[in-house]
Image 1 (cartoon, rainbow, N blue to C red):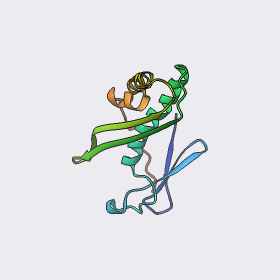
Image 2: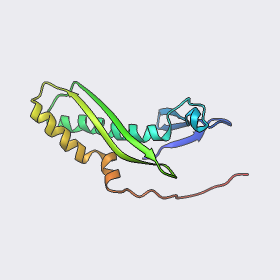
Image 3: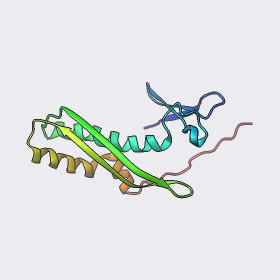
Image 4: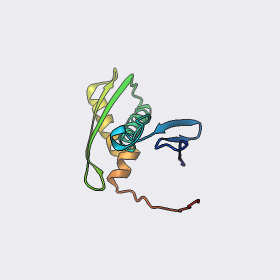
Length: 135
């Protein structure tokens, strides 16, 4: 998997894309940005929620459970110098005609195998691969 991020001409904002999908990334005005896109912290939290949501639907299909609606709210604290996330938690609401116990079991299972949370819990390494400076 590969994603691209490129700043938008002489601004703090950037375009991010993977294949045909794109979004705008920026710092908040309080942090010196234009505030026209998602901050890295917001994208980080959204990645957690998106992983849980996508994987819940995938697992539901495997379990032959029909889900009508999912709502996930991810919260976390940011602090320190440099800032990092801590105390990440999420709430989930699932609408389904399946028995409550089955949905709760599905949610707990998905919580353990969803790729982004699993990668974070496992301490996935991130390394700088290559640097190029253009003058």
